Image 1: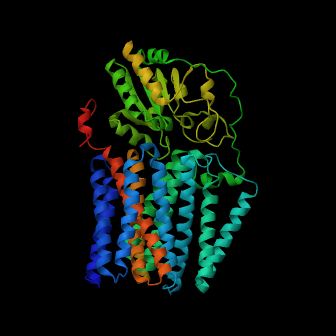
Image 2: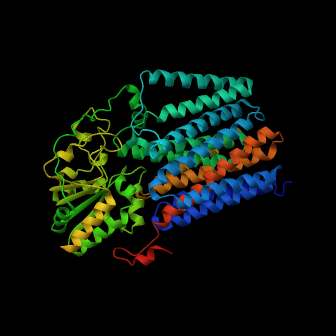
Length: 457
Length: 103
């Protein structure tokens, strides 16, 4: 049954595509972003209704049940999951999207006859599988199921090269013979490539990997659109591929290195240096009252939030502390490193949740020259983004990454859970600096104590 | 479909993608990633088409799995993005009444 002519179908898909473009465009300002996202969702809904009315679709009851199952799984998780687990969730959804694209391609194999469409099928299967397993490993790393340190073994580069070569050969056979056996081999090899690609990536680089895999899934969707002759899939997939590419490059440059350096750095046998064990050196740890005095009598305080703040759910407490200090005449700003947290812009989301005004959030380029005139830099649950090893230690994995120069401030206060190094696993020299004070404990507990102590002054 | 038409569409979409995304402020990079993530869930259309054209039970099972995965991507992606963006809802600058945040 097809109620819609191809012309109407094409027109409705065009409207859906425009909705997607408007969704991305809406993100140019926080004012229009939410409405844009809703427009995007409406476009998706329109497209799904259109597909049911346009093509000859059998098995409709089964399909509707499958859609209901998918929604019933995804919607509650997305509503309930903690803000701190957002990166995992985004990676997870990206992975299942890639998996879906790969499966669609497998099923299209039988009906694709031209060489071009067979190549597109192979491309989708491979990239979809890479995206699926790569995202799965990423989720594992973020969730702490797999070590966030780079996982490297001797001969990794050779194994990777061999697997990629085998995948290309299998892909060639799929194009030539269309045999199901080769297609399955291709999928398995694709899964291996994805895992091998992400396992060696260090924890600090995970946000970039999520973004890159997102672009991959987009490209897989675009390719499957070519196979199916569906322009909406082509446009939507290409949009995502393009936006993911831009975002990946923007983040990589924020970390001061190329995308290839992040992905393949570990293959070159680069050191995970910096983990030189100096942990028995003395540090100055303090109590909440002392920190409160430091903050209260400062003229200017710069707060550097990191993942630890997100984990501890301390965003409301820190916002309250900032308001309290400001009421006492202290100038308070937040310094946001582009890759603080586990996603690009993670800290912006977190602080927005706590109603911190945008004007108080400063980007790295803006805030770095101001550290000289800062009395106290309060680092809450961040480590790698303020680690001077990025400037001073050429062997370090984060060498070359622009950092927030908190070391230039007159006093530095770290709120840390323990002396354990950060996600990237690199020791931070700044912790041993004489002007550094440490306050150990869960970020939220520490902040609550400091806030109480400030109020008592 | 005519290969040149397809190529035209792809090239234009790349430019639109670059153009639109380069205007996104870094504050919104997380929702951007999440929103783009939701958009590629539109592979659901492809999954529905293949599920609607197969009669072989095994292939149908695979296609329905694809439908489930794609729906999770699409629905979950938009819901998560909306949740993030809700926190960026317009509000009065500094010192605003916290009640304004939720609505």
